[in-house]
Image (cartoon, rainbow over all chains, first blue to last red; front, side, top):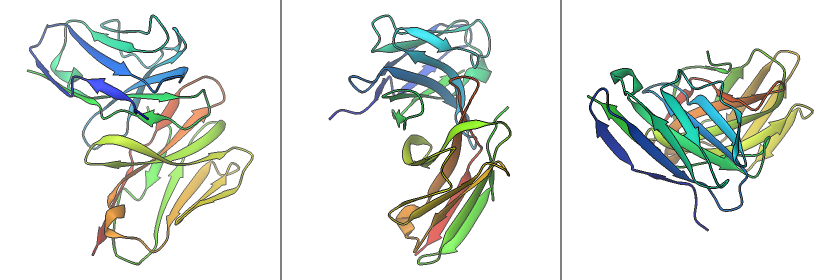
Amino acid sequence: GAGVSQTPSNKVTEKGKYVELRCDPISGHTALYWYRQSLGQGPEFLIYFQGTGAADDSGLPNDRFFAVRPEGSVSTLKIQRTERGDSAVYLCASSAGTANEQFFGPGTRLTVL
Amino acid sequence: SQQGEEDPQALSIQEGENATMNCSYKTSINNLQWYRQNSGRGLVHLILIRSNEREKHSGRLRVTLDTSKKSSSLLITASRAADTASYFCATDDTGGFKTIFGAGTRLFVKA
């Protein structure tokens, strides 16, 4: 079956612009996670959804970052007024529930010029 | 800050040798997982061990968990060049839903 997909695979934007990153989880997975990963580092937790609600958004670095999952499947991570420090690979993962293995997408590489 | 810390940061071995990576964490956990990542994208789940388990095997992988020392180890036996990757431990703490990854061990297996 289809795995987790993320679009776009690469996104180059200018400082100050708005970007949206999309995640399509595995069908039926209720849990969805967003992470970001900088070169040489492990994934950094951003937000966790259980169904449509954000059960834990404590990893979002500031109020420029926001994520939604309106129908409990596809999720969009939104970044306003992008900064060069936002450049990273943004990873999405889904699982059948908490305390289960997570299936990761290939990531979106965001570059802010 | 990340909870998991892997040791060593980098490891280079010959094909056929065993590779051992260690992970330490700071708070109480529900479970600990190990993931592999090739080329900076797409993590692949290797194994999950729950807090009430002490050892788990999957093929050439053996994971141990010592909750009293807040540490885990991943052993890859009879390594292959294809095992070259970064390996991360990840913990789910008992207080919430976060999954916290360490900085990873970069394993290089020479053919």
